[in-house]
Image (cartoon, rainbow, N blue to C red; front, side, top):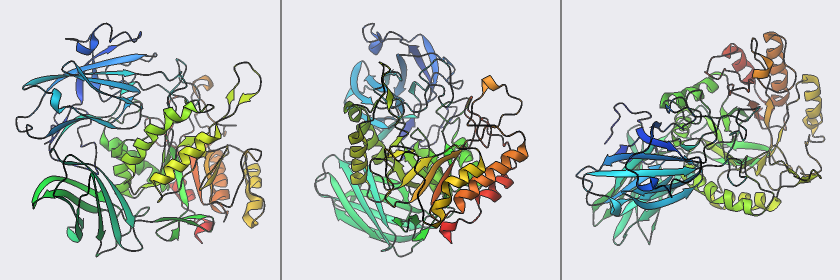
Amino acid sequence: MSNACNIPRPEYPRPQMRREAWINLNGEWEFEIDHGKSGRERGLSSAEKLSGKIIVPFCPESKLSGVEYKDFMAAVWYRRKFTIPSDWKNGRVLLHFGAVDYYTEVWINGVSVGTHKGGFSSFALDITKHLLDGENTIIVCAEDDVRSGKQPSGKQSTQYYSRGCHYTRSTGIWQTVWLEYVPNTYIESMKYIPDLDNGLLHIEALVEGCTDGCTLNAKAIFDSRMVGSGSAVITGQYGFLTLKLSEIHPWGPGEPNLYDLNVSIQRNGEIVDHVESYFGLRSITIKNKAIYINGKPVFQRLVLDQGYYPDGIYTAPSDEDLKKDIEISMGLGFNGARLHQKVFEPRFLYWADKLGYLVWGEQASWGLDITKPEGLEHFLPEWMEVLKRDFNSPAIIGWCPFNETWDLKDPAGIGAIPQDNEILRIVYQVTKAIDRTRPVIDTSGNYHVVTDVFDIHIYEQDPEVFAAKFEPMKTGGEVFNTFPERQRYEGQPYFVSEYGGIWWNPGQKDKESWGYGSRPKSEEEFLDRYEKLTRTLLENPNICAFCYTQLYDVEIEVNGLYTYDRKPKFDPAIIKKINTIKAAIEE
């Protein structure tokens, strides 16, 4: 079932777990801003009408929402009606939210049906027992406070205006809202562990409802040929199944080999639930100071992608825009991206999977105070939801929960309050416990506590000075360490995860722009600097990856290779020629 007519973002929002019976609830909703967070007292949870309108799934700060309100909003309310199809009577109805920033409560027909904390992870509520025949009403309240220090908010500005590398905020609903009809016994989620060397796919399914007499069944298909099948008895709420694949087609950068996967639950030979999915067969290992993909050292030529859009802020105007950003990057010779200070939506990961594009998954950790143990409470539950949701994407090549966890300035003006190292250690350990298949960076750029990959950020603009910092490493000498007093290099793969950021904004007033360091005086000077900085990293046999800042401008930050509205600043072929120089680590 698909109702794609005249609504924004009509595509199926969860590509790796598809069912036929679903309804997209994007489009016009009633809307009201609640500056005093007094809506519950004023009866908005059962209101007959809200004062305004909004287009979901776009945040109220965005132009595409029709609201375009830029100031802080303590809380926002949404309301709309919907009708359940007549044949959705014998199972369960789930209400899904792709993402709502930040604390959400939902009412169906005046009854609170659940809450969720976290602005970037998806969640679903079983609303079956609260539904009425005919028309139903959904009301949503989202509370948001990026200045509290108690929620990850990424690059959302804590001041009225955007400044530097902090941008327009995104409050409330910013991903697709949808209904799904499932059987009383259904697959809640699945975890795929590919085993390339042995030609296997391990499947772990979490099943809701009664599983007595049920089996988990799966079929793997490649290019319309069935290449593996199997069945296993479901015990309790879990089914474990391993498929032996008769054909091996590795997934890798630029080689997006994907298998289709049909998974079902059967009881006494009859299908109870059925989902369509896909997977990629690939391996990731660390050895010889490099990250190996499918047994070969791959230099990761990455670019920083912030996931912002001029008209949609956090939300891409269309599915095609998600795909286009990846195609732009690949056209510049990059083979992947750091998905920076934002958890990207599943549709972006789908296109990365389809196009063979490497990505690092990152939480929007900025804005969260991690100088005290309570920071873990506000970070870990949502991060675990992200790991669960996105685990199966072959494009995700590693996890990076934190970025630049700087010490906080002491309000009294005496020194600084350091990060709580145990928070980083615990998050690293939990991430590794959930996912043993990928490397994990505890915090990108500084103050490593425990990490599989040693990474640094450097925005030195003088190519000679830049090269001198890395020269000793080329022959096994001292490794460049940005914070030797706080972190120690222990022989891990070495990743320059932010560099460049070259400020290029000809014709724009200085006060309307921001970038790193001294600006080139000409396009020729820009390209010369870009090539020399990049060559330094590619030609060093002890560096395994780089990430250039950044793919496109974002608001007043103008160090992109493309403009904010995705127009090239330079001939992409020139950038591609530089980026695709063979790396020393690949020799």
